[in-house]
Length: 127
Image (cartoon, rainbow, N blue to C red; front, side):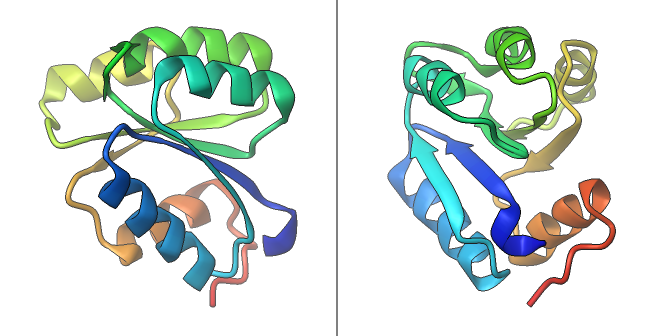
């Protein structure tokens, strides 16, 4: 199952992307793509279908919450997980209202990421 999972990481901070990428690799997920802007995220979604998209709320060229609708239009089957250091109740609620399926607070741990994957894919074999 893991090899089949395809994940997109959208964050403008390189260290966040590489930490998340490494975490996913450790969990046995090989198909991981990265994007650092909202525009890159949208074009990545047009090129391929992703099971899960980890999406930063604050992107240099847009508000992550504003592009959830576009992602859901292009890839209705994707699970969009918002990633933010600002986990205010409004932020979480707003993201969920706009179509996000989950929310991860920065700084996150590999354990939190594994739990999020399990939430969507209970049968996932996690390394």
